[in-house]
Image 1 (cartoon, rainbow, N blue to C red):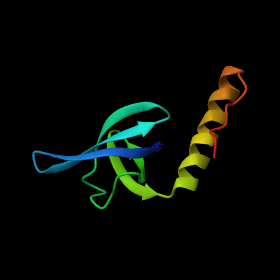
Image 2 (cartoon, rainbow, N blue to C red; image 1 turned 90 degrees about the vertical axis):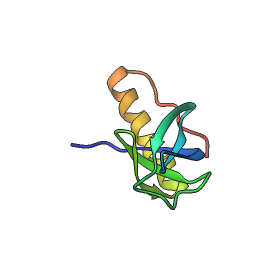
Image 3 (cartoon, rainbow, N blue to C red; image 1 turned 180 degrees about the horizontal axis):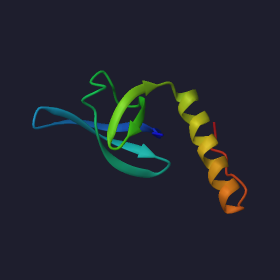
Length: 86
């Protein structure tokens, strides 16, 4: 089973002719390869798997997925989920 995590593109640059970006995941910034989603723009939400953005998704879908992940985390840790603000 593979898990893709949604994040927001906050920076785009070229690195050795490969599109790269910084993607924000709930306050955490990670370097992500954008080679599979070269059409991604600043502010877009992308689905990231093992350091690669594999698709562009809309903001509502990104927030919904993050809320589901928070619910799963809360269910396994006995803490109540903290929903992301709209």
